[in-house]
Image 1 (cartoon, one colour):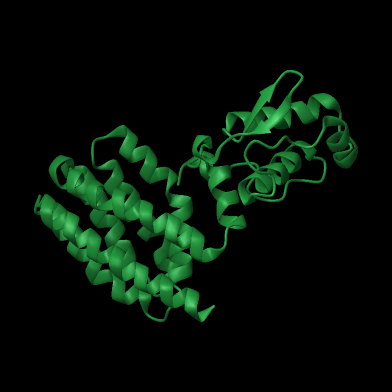
Image 2: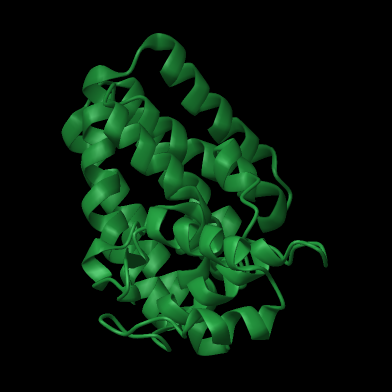
Length: 244
């Protein structure tokens, strides 16, 4: 995961004096959850200043952060208005984290798996054609970390690295960026599927098939092996949600 995603100031509860972070987080969550709907204005400045007991400059700086994340549009005299969902910066680590926190798990899973089915098979096919020897070695190293893990928790980080390094091996900066930003959502997905017994063991041969296809420079096989892995992941996630 990128340093930005890992150390984002709005993902966890800030220190007591960091009211700026609290305002950004709470308003962001209200927007992403739908409590503040697209087209709706944020509460008046006077109301928010009283609620959070902050100065006007502190409040306005928090609103500017929400503007930068694509969540609101600030207009002079009109106030801050929630933007349409299709204009939100959904791969922003904070926006993505708020979405994970506020959406029902089945809805989050459906959204993520739809993206993964489009993105990951294509990324694997591209990587099979474009990866350097060093990049293939890095993917293999991540797989070895997965194989050495004794449980799902220990497998989490090498599993994330495996998928992230495939995106990097496409040779496409945008693909690498998307793969990196997806790590946060992917982390939550893997943690959910790990609730199913022996998932980490059963997933190893499927990841091995992807690795072998990449090493053989077989784009079609890499695409197909990734699809098969995602189908199994979907079953695991459905089973985990049913257990809940």
